Image 1 (cartoon, rainbow, N blue to C red):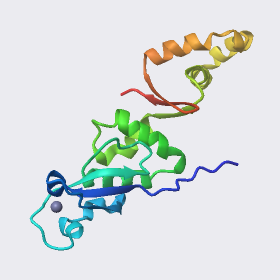
Image 2 (cartoon, protein in one colour; image 1 turned 120 degrees about the horizontal axis):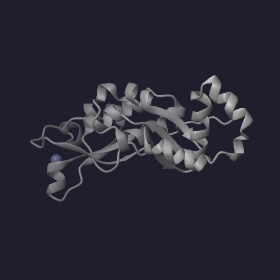
Image 3 (tube, rainbow, N blue to C red; image 1 turned 60 degrees about the vertical axis):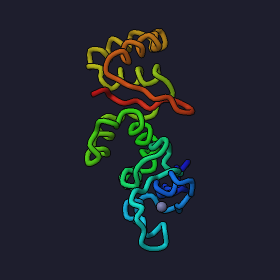
Image 4 (cartoon, rainbow, N blue to C red; image 1 turned 180 degrees about the horizontal axis):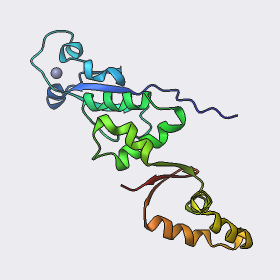
Length: 180
Ligand SMILES: [Zn+2]
């Protein structure tokens, strides 16, 4: 049995923007789930007039965050990832970066679980599975008489995906999401 394990806890390199703009790098790596708790004083070793912190680098987010972001955002995403099963985390990261922009943070996980239709080898495979799951008894009878491999699943998939589904290609296959 293959067990998917997330080895890395997401981490964020939090830096001071004022220092950065003055040509200095003042910052530190932190566990991302507590990124929102880091203060300017933490980074400067004491009181400072510098106020704004920013995540300038990060690791372990599985692609959920691309580029820079606020420490609050990094913490929210790390929290969401921590609350997911290992087999959901990668798909969630894809969903958040591609489809989650308009969704309120409080509803990220629910919305993702609502829309996620699983990982599949190809559009054609998904179309076949979908047909089997949604077909009526009558359809099934008809399909029995109709050798399955004579159905053009690529064509069926094209029709299916022109409607209510959204796919994101990753290595080895696709994540399928239903459209809103
Ligand atoms: Zn500073």
